[in-house]
Length: 540
Image (cartoon, rainbow, N blue to C red):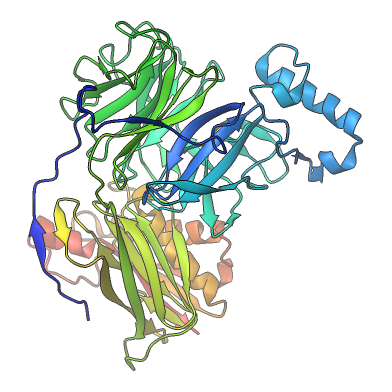
């Protein structure tokens, strides 16, 4: 059973930057073990503020791992031949000769410092696959506190292309980057950056494209687990004829921080902020520069606000090279919540050991955590709806939705939830969320992909399980057409599962048209209930 606890509703105000004369707002340069004599860029704090990810540029002791055609060239070639190869690669990337790869701006590695929200004291330089001899940089966190977007796309064989990837941290290890698909993505120069909204549904991208006047800002909307819409220009109020770079979008999706050398900057690039005025993403308030001492006569860039600590992180060249600074611009406010869960067998009410929990934000990447003893703990951001589904071989899990509102104060720092597994038996239905298709067509909408991938996971975890996909329709139209449509939709789901690696012989399909309604088709809503696909177990 879910625990009930008291809460107090209060108005959540997004922090407003105080004037610089307020002596409570003090700028702080991060310590020397973080800010070296080299350039430090792209500070990305964790949700809880206790970890900072950043990129160090041109550092001689960078990760020289270089994988090409399934061979680690760093180990294959002697040092002189390897350095010559790396010079050629960096020269191709920059479009001009590179004499020393170590000093090249394309020598970028991700570093991690940990501590608490007040101080950092532990520094790590991760190995591959997070770092290699090619440019590496984490640019934004996702709703999953352990998943990030990084620049570039990498293939398992070692190729690199322009774009972005999703990479996930599992304790001290990192998964191989998964390519992110942005429709019609291209950038004319190598300068590129992005930020993701707090709920994971929006990207703000900085790039040079054919409709740009310089480096301009664009918006993309999530269309699937790793799919995004084509970039849309944010308009000529937010974008000028100068450079607009390194965006950061506030938790409420209304305030945008970015860097620009537009007027009236104090010199070079300054940090600006602007408010979104409507839902078109094209109407913005005139961007205003932040006050000194955040902005200076030197370049400031890469703002990233962490609400849990109240710190605004950014980079500045005021001390001769790019260093990371921060200022506390708001009182700390915890933005994460801990779930303590249990997994039960619905039939016996016993705890289920050796299970898994699959979780994700809406349309976001699917993640799993293990539950060896039937218990699990998961930390998620407030204000973002998450789906949790238990999984275990020979069982089907019931999905639960979890949302902790950001404008509530919770007297407990955790929430108890119970998840349920149903034993799989012949002729049982595997309960799924509705599968949606294009109207009158057998084309599955991308919004239904995560649920079908969950079905594929059940089949994968139960290799002897066989199913029948039953397509149903309402009664509007010619009967023969309805039977054909229902069968085509069942076959479309079968094809999806086969593409995910499920053997075709394990899947039967049948189109039942309007033959077995579950409502009387008297209204639009009741007809919609009849337009469905059911998954029935035929063999275990």
